[in-house]
Image 1 (tube, one colour):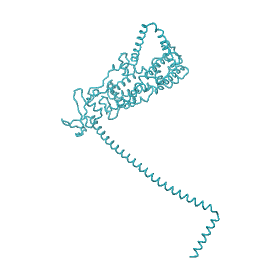
Image 2 (cartoon, helix red, strand yellow):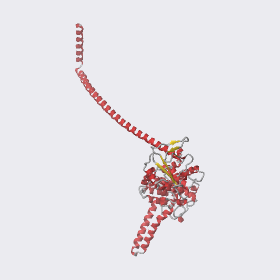
Image 3 (cartoon, rainbow, N blue to C red):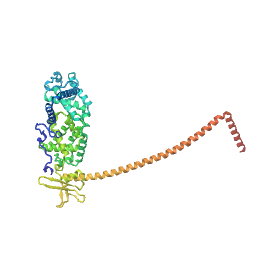
Image 4 (cartoon, rainbow, N blue to C red):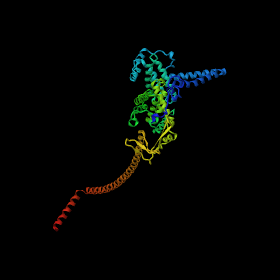
Length: 508
């Protein structure tokens, strides 16, 4: 039934592109612009302020000219000191002035296989790459020393470092430079991850909790509400999106932005695989976005907002502006924005139903209305406890209504069964909780009884020990008295005993 209804999620390829019309993919974090246009827009007000300041200075009195020159020289001196601190050398020259690296240094990098990060590290430690290794080490040490900087300033420093390092490989092809920069990003950000991820200077942690609670509150959203295509059998048999859900969850375990993007790409590729198996037609953007929203709602990935912001701030610009990874990440951003603004209209529900779902007040007798946009008719599924359902010979369930018994679809029957099982599980859980509480009380009473018995045994044993010690002291006194009397006393006692014994025998 839901296949014929109007789709609440629509997206066109043009909506994913940059608002500036540059052809790159935009992002909601940059207000619809790509990273390049967004940085240019952010730098434009600063340039205007500098131009305005220079004009005001030119029109001012000549008295302040020496003061302004001194101020500029001081500023240039500080800038040069900071660059020397980062690079360990004078400021990096512009691209036209950069000397070409040694051919033998680039020859090893040119023959590097894609994804071979181990050999990249070996080449970086070679004597021919000593200068590049020194620059990387100096940058990492400086970033770790100044890890308390604002996260946006840290992101600017990392992006500037990418630009300067890319000049080292300028003699190679563009594809090879992109491959080597991915290795360089992994090297740098693996070290800096613990310092810049979810930084204290931003509200990423709070946004993560808000988004996680939002997704958790939408756990009642079904694939049918989102119009998610499923292969034969539907989600009741087996969820075909389980591999995509696993991939998006694994993103939090990665440290390099490129590795996180790889998890996003693997998730989206699994989604396309499922969409291809569910229909003979090619998957459209609407189906893909609906399925990706369902995956995010089902997975509820940990620290999703922080991971996305980490990729935006410290990832390579070309990975987000274009290509397959850029398209996938843009759709993921759209999915998160859709979830944050999800309303009744997007799910073809009435505001009352949406509010009732959000308040978790649905019961076994709730009404589920699915609006059919083709004929503007509403088919209502009533499941009241006072009404009885009828099952036909072919297994169909009939629900009583004013116009007679109404046949239910397989999905609706499945919903009734699931709700009945949930009610049964709820009763079992209550009984288990009561039994656990009773068992806890019994254990507490048993512990108290054991302690009382131990106290009584200890008291009795202590009295026995006291009496034994007294008798032992008396025996010691008697023994000591005998030892003090000497041998003659012992013989006298024995003689008296023998005389008494003879007297007794005579009397007998």
